[in-house]
Length: 119
Image (cartoon, rainbow, N blue to C red; front, top):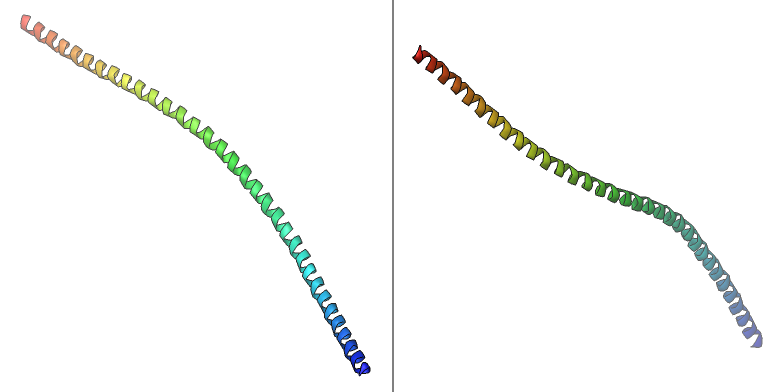
């Protein structure tokens, strides 16, 4: 019986060693996969962070540009308001000149009529 126990214990030890070596192989494969994924993800994270930095820079630059454009639009609005006022003033001057020309034409006609009557 002791020989049977020894051979059973020996077989058990052999099985345990086999299981342990297979477990070590699986563990090594898992660690290798993890290292591969870490390297792969690290490279992708670096690329994503670079793209994000570029996008953040572009957003900051666009925000500055938008503020500058807003200022330009405000200046243009003020200029348009001034031009409208100038135009209204010129229109009034023009209308007054036309009225004066009409009046002058009427006065000439009246003068001509008066000359005809008195002649």
